[in-house]
Amino acid sequence: MVLMRTRLIVLFFFLGAGSVTTAQPPSQPRPSNVHSARIENFVTVPDKAGIHVNIKNTGERPVTAFLIEFYMLNPNGQHIPCGGSGADMIDWSDAMPGRSFYVHMRRNWIPTNGTLLSDGYPRCPGAPAQTGSMQAELSYIMFDDGTGEGDARQIEFTLRTRQQARNERLRWVGRFTVLRDTSDLKSSAQSLYQDLVDAVHAAEIVPDVASRQEMARPVRDEMQHLALDITQWAAHNESLHKNEYLEWRVTDLEQRTARLIRGAGTTWLAPR
Image (cartoon, rainbow, N blue to C red; front, side):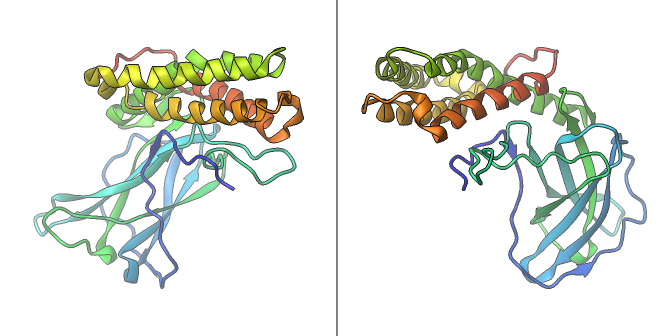
């Protein structure tokens, strides 16, 4: 059961079932700066104009983000970009112990020697995508400590986005933690919820600031929903410990925040 599907960078395109044919590997693949992972194979889904791509982690650390770029070669041998498929999984959730509940997308980091299947719908500007002749390149990957390999611009973008989410999360996560042991859960949760509502409204007053902090809004929205659910539970004068599910959501928030802090790296990047 997925309760919130907001995540940092998600470029997955999900495909339905369909017949598949094996695509030939690129005859002259472009140089890649990614050394700890590779595309093992990809298959096309002609009736869905889509592609399945397997990513193999050949390094020693789990891969937490990636981007595959699709392209075709024109008659002159030039590369025609056709979109991509990827995801940043740093802030995805583990399942609640003993249950199938998870708050975000289920965490699916690619372990050492592990593989991950990515699906995509290539789109080529000015020309129909011919999936049978499509080629693919692993543009970049990232690890759980904020380092990465591949396209430096993509890595910088991912780090900047992670840092925006981290900064917003750190503003509030401590106030959720103290809800476990507060003597007045109703008042504390209600105050937290109201402050989150006010923060959303305050951000909307200055659109330029909001546009430079695009990841702050979904992070704040998630916490606002959680604060509201706790407030409604506390209206019955019950402690947080009596609601295993809500208590787990707070724990999940703490765990994901810890991973986000590490995954945002040590170099601060100014918002653009």
